[in-house]
Length: 149
Image (cartoon, rainbow, N blue to C red):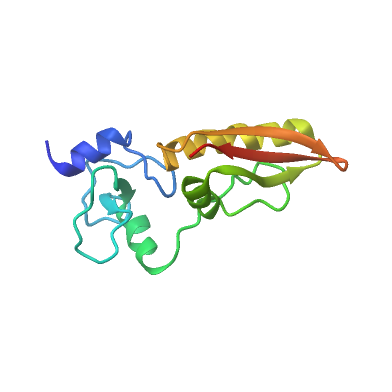
């Protein structure tokens, strides 16, 4: 089994950046083809440690080398002031704690956002155990993430 097949199987053949399926049969030279992203390498060509390799589309991986990746919130969620997901995840991995990540005018919309976010983070950062809660305050509903270090 190749390293790509091993990482792909572990990741369920989903791109860790865009969360879309990766076709293992596509050419590795195609922008939608599979590639291994060494997420913590400080320098190009550095050997990654176990768990630092993630599956990404070739295009997502290449783009990440030029700009910090953005993990988009779904357009169908009705929320205001959504936090930058990757920055929030990195901070929670480093420090743990509690973060307000979005707000909504309805409890049901806030709960949908909370459920989606926990599911998305489970694939984005599988070693980070997060829970989400919806808290009412000031005529709005806050989506709150909690993580223990």
